[in-house]
Image 1 (cartoon, rainbow, N blue to C red):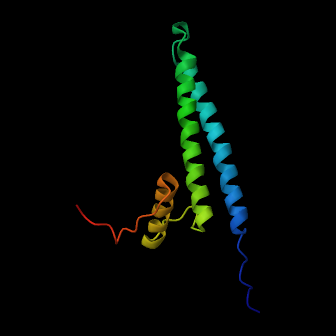
Image 2: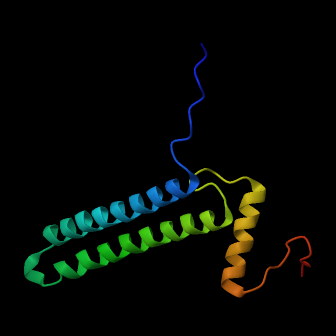
Image 3: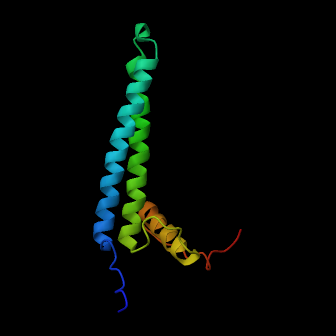
Length: 114
């Protein structure tokens, strides 16, 4: 009797939502822990400890937002969420980012060098 091949652990949509949930949870935990630690470690008499903690929290939240946006873009294009992209996939992602910024796509092969 031969063992049956294992089924994938989840569908692409389930992996996407699991990734997004993990990003949100990790971002909130890291932001809270780092922000709280900075607030406790800074001088509380200076009345600026909460400012530094807030800045750290905002930076961590921005990093989490950026990571989630990159994962969302890869999902929209049907690219691997976490694996390294090959050249063709990277070019597709680059064109998508260019289109989302400018509203047009320039073909790199038709570009004239100045």
